[in-house]
Image: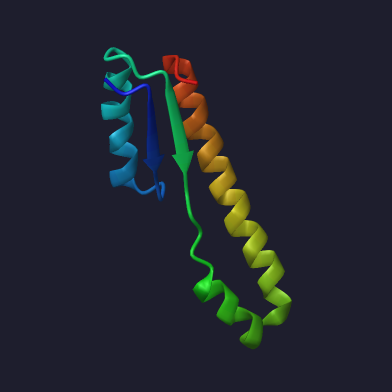
Length: 83
């Protein structure tokens, strides 16, 4: 079937339910999962004009949160045997 699949996620509860379906693809021959998350910075960028002191802290908080969720998801997929 598919050797590599792309898993775009926003880490919502709905997107996390997809993990179960992805795990089933392992038995069908899928070897690798590429996880992607896109941070829409348009709202954050407007913050620069209204609260420049908070911008960098808020950006870092969002990026750290996404990185943590991505690492948890990647670890879960690795435990199933995905690359």
